[in-house]
Image (cartoon, rainbow, N blue to C red; front, top):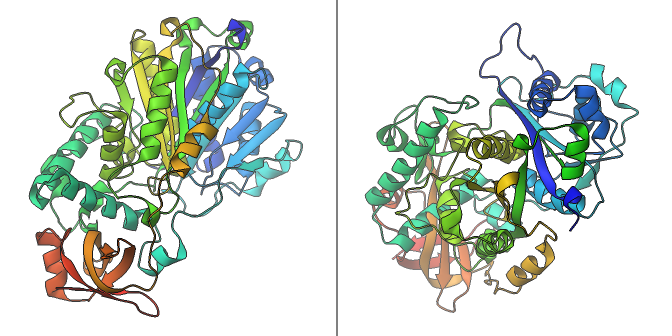
Length: 503
């Protein structure tokens, strides 16, 4: 491979506006501009010179910008005139997926310099806050192409039983993990409390963190008026925070372009191993609720491409929307529960901030700085979309520490074919008869009161079923105090939703 075409990340910028100030950004365009100004400063060359090299701009979907408007806003803010722009569908894997895809394109000579940028400004406004004043100036910028899978995260049958959003689905993974590990409810809550305590401590040292104050395990797991259950066993402090004002951007280019621009080699970070694939799309079709074959394969692919083992990785930032996502990724990439390496460099979505689909952009930007400070180290970043569904992983090293083999091909299609070949569990939409609980959750209202029990189970013939429990205080109480996984009962089909009755 021509060394001039080796893909490298050369600059990044982040900005978190924890409170609206009179002299601070008042809209998402200005918020984005600050992050891009910091990226230019990080590159160490004039903005006009940097902008002249950018031929591609790609942005994750944002709730704080008009549909498809973010790539044009990015071009306008930095002064670039790209020949191609892209805008993604929903997915927290997107920024890492961008790096994996476009690094390969750069290595093939198909792209020159790709600017990746994203944001959310939902703390200030839940509505689009890029007004029309800038839109008129973007007419000459090429229209973005929508890329990515347009499917929603759950199917109609799952939605009918209360599983429409990740906040309702991820507790199913957590309760399944607890049973898989053989831990009691109290033991497992203690474990995930300790995990998030570590994440919060790391966030307290992150200058870009949304919540820079460390929290104790007790504060995270104890149910209080300010820390109610959302979906058992998750308290509010175990859920991600999307109401943030945060922006981040990274510049991906080649060694040849970086040399021509005059960006110092000390800045260069190499993606040396990648992996992209997705699990069976809908959670109810998967073999179980405590593993991810796609993460396992993506990690093996990335490690093989980087010619290293998991023992060679010094730093991690595992996608951290919920504790179960971290634990499943940890298990699948080959880390033991006793490994003392931290699983985040930012502090995670709960504490560092969860700007929608753009969180991994902050992971990548932070990892770049970590590896610049420790150039002999390697780092692994993972992104995740929907309900432990879409996965993108990358191993990074400082350019001076890269292996002699270079990133040539992203074998995403081969990886995906292996996942697609795995068995899909049949779901009986109208079950009737005896069944066993496989996993479950108890969903709560905004006042902290339990409102709906959700059961995922297996019939005697091996088919899976979804059902809701009876609305009973005794049943709801038992679901929080006793191990429900493995209990038997009877399921009956219904017009709107199936119903499960404990034996």
